Length: 172
Image (tube, rainbow, N blue to C red; front, side, top):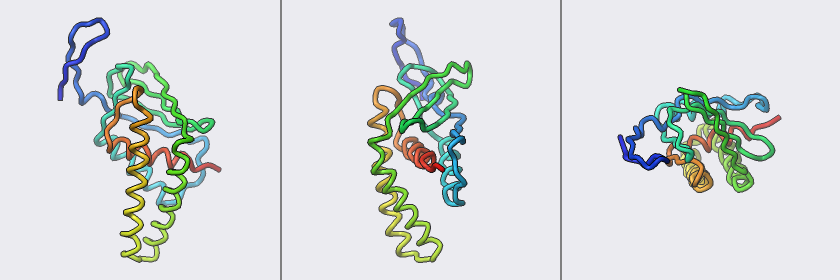
């Protein structure tokens, strides 16, 4: 999809929306503990889904596709964004305090979900999954809100990024 936009010099330009996407994602592995099979599966699925389809447009006006490195430092999400083409790095920092409750609740619900799956309790799995999806949606909405003015992402991209933020919270 192509849209018209104004360049900073005032001339009209055509921007290819399909270029405003993530093409490569890495996570800071320095603080990673041995993750469970379930968590590794969630991480791998979130990255695969993100790379398959996403919308990611930094407010700085950079054109993608982009490389993204995610890390958590001093209770802040640190996103290093660089276009694949030229490698100019832009850092977006987001305080994580507003996510503390959602992430904690999400971990608790996920643990219950995995226990229900292991015990093959289908009724319980379905009920817990409703709560898990609700928390996931809440986390994604908060991400979109907090990125306002810094980064434009769609709902599905926000959901997958929220999953990766949760994975990064697992520390030794």
